Image 1 (spheres, rainbow, N blue to C red):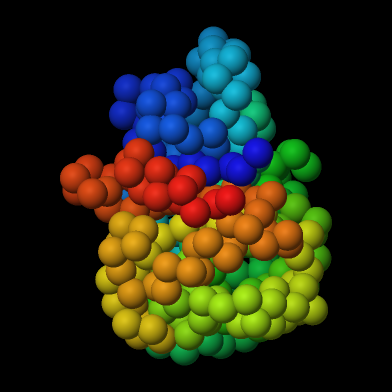
Image 2 (tube, rainbow, N blue to C red):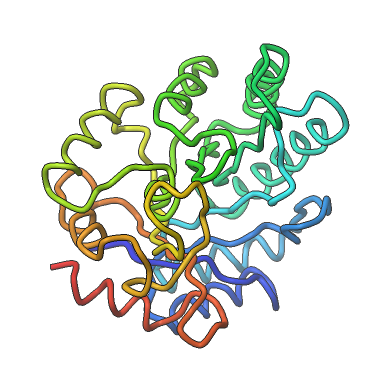
Length: 277
């Protein structure tokens, strides 16, 4: 069964997001654990955890992921770096109680330029996060489409290797890949890309895809999302990934603006369902 889902709001609680994904025809889900633009750390009580796990099982929504706060910058050595670390520790701790696989993380930025100190802070923070959280929760690096950390497979591979944990996985965003100069629009190009990913990172670490079209041109360095089929990412990219034997088993989660402007919707998922077979 193809895993198609969306990033949805937790307005009304975690359980409400489960009902909303069913309503738009999805069978997997991504949510924020708390407010994405603040430093309010995720918390959960036993009653809420029990209810969520029960409903998640009944509705057959699996897997579910958290997406970390937009404020995260694990390359910062001071207050922001410390808060970033604590935020993800809190999030992964909640994830383990809710049967949520892990957290998809934008690692942050080296700002003007990469230094040994900033890179060391990044690796140290990730290792500390893993040390303080359970083995069941995954730390999932999302590729970047702009000047943030993780724009290239080479940079992601370096981080994965230096952290050295099986719990570190990768989420690939189609909009970000296109923005960073990766063209996956033909069978040949996709095969070359997957071979490169396998050689540098390992396909076993590829956890999920974010399926997003792009408002911007190829290799633009900008990562503004668009609805599926309405942007500049070649439409065949989505079809190839949904059908390729090395990727078709993975979860595909949309973060699109929605055809009505209200966020990921049934119409985007229906387009993907029509081309998956």
